[in-house]
Image (cartoon, rainbow, N blue to C red):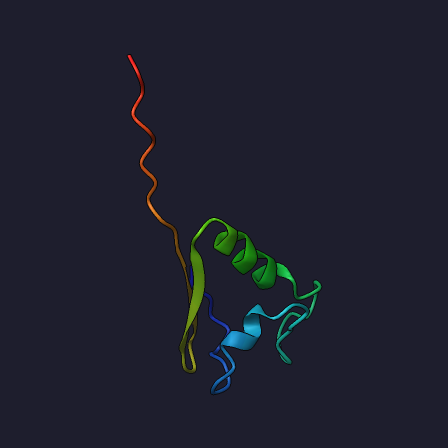
Length: 75
């Protein structure tokens, strides 16, 4: 997923995942919990949620999950 937020200030990418964090500009509706909850839920499923800042353009969010092979069925 990507957005067109205009990029983040230098060194602020991890702050996005803190509970109640909101950018100082743009849409400030909501509680600022979405990314925090998402990262925790993904981590509980042995995955990760990360962000890559593209200065002056926006951010790209990536979710990585393990591929789980279902157990073999007995015949």
